[in-house]
Length: 299
Image (cartoon, rainbow, N blue to C red):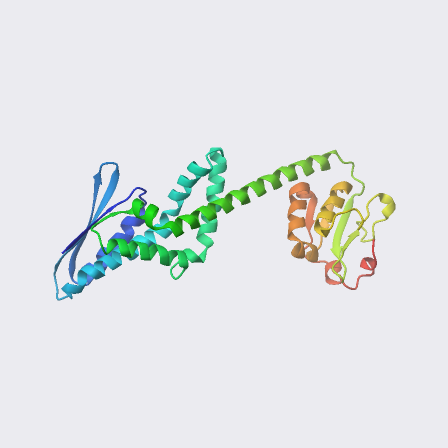
């Protein structure tokens, strides 16, 4: 009654699973339906065959329904399992200058971003475009070259993949730059002579950083450790990191409100100072942050 041949460049196990599920649907509805795989040249070909009616069934409607169900299966396969193959093709073509290990890291970032994007799920704009492209093609032909269909009729999906990959490259380069910066800071800290044994970092009731010694007393500016609002650093988080790196204490205790409200600074400090940083889970200082007398006024 109907035979549709699907040629596939990038094969993954999910395609046969999707198509077998489609065949099972028609067998349960009372039709002979079978899936066969053949190798033609360098490309695998999947033969989807809908045969005679075994039981009473709407024969006149079966071919259209068969094509529609195949289109839905192919659309699911494209959005769920073909992204990695085309990410790899784009990496090879546009970002050939990255070494192999860095390409793998970029690919992982791109895949993570792609999987998290709802527009490629059912009901999303990208999925709708893919499904429409497949439906229009399958309705008018018995031979589907899936790679050609993607390249020539799924421009929106390919642009979506390219944008996702470009962002992954930008994120990778930013992270690489950050890691090199952290490495430089670690080297600088290793050269510094510690000015104090321990520094506690907390927030006062106005949300300003407060620096205390191991006795929970304000640090004496004469120790060479002080908060200077005029040193040209507008970001308080950057200023905190800069000050602690200059002080290079043996240990740093970050109290609860600091590491919950300033994760960027905390992440940098943990990378630079490693096991010299402790996150305070709960203490009287954290509990009484707005009332503790040691935290009043500017240090």
